[in-house]
Image (cartoon, rainbow over all chains, first blue to last red):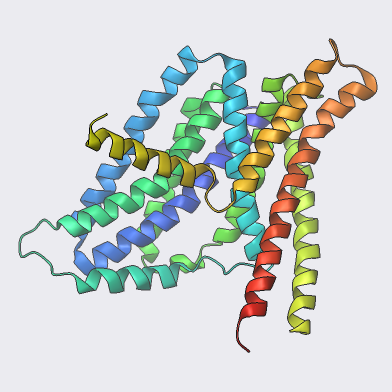
Length: 249
Length: 88
């Protein structure tokens, strides 16, 4: 396994894990308030639709779209996604944005779901829809990441396996700790994913437009390290500026 | 076009807009401009060597950092103005 494959697998695993934590918060909230059967059915249906999307779109992209064009589009998409993740993580790390609080989100979902009337039968359409929508929307970003990372480097199998492993691991841990999802270091994971997506995005969009990276694939870990250093400096500088702002107020 | 497909198309367009741009359109625009500029730079010379090659290799990461810095600056400014407008 080359260094770029390791970076790819780690990126997809972390991205899927972060999104799964958010999806699991919704599923647990639905299960606790409306019953587990419909919550699990919604979860299973959403995972099935997401898997079908990867299987249907991935190979078609590989076979019919020229590699250079694919790398520019995929690299650009990864850059936009990666910068969105990294920006959010940096703002949260420096206190400019409130941290993602899974406990608060859980409480909000429970409050909303508790108000609706529950049908007397076994199936609960509201529970199914909320669980399905939550998992599908959170998972859609993972599908885009799996497709873009997997297709651009012809490693769709590795990317899909890493995403599947994250679903199993987060699902397993979630089953054990149930409502203690707030303990997951989500912002640190988001920062790591952002750094990797931005690095992959830079590498592939660069290759697509004709940049010859020194050392070829070895440029990827160098990009991760360089962007990591920039993020570290940004947290230090923005954190310092933030403290100065607070003292002034 | 019948109303239902038009509605779906509009909803899909809104979803794509939210997915790609959301509340940070400067990131999308910045990435498009950065990749476009590097494409022009990479194709300006037939076989980039020496300093020119170093410039094409270094340009994209530098531009990406500039885009991120500009977006963070915008976020910091709006956070400060939101705090300033809060009643004390």
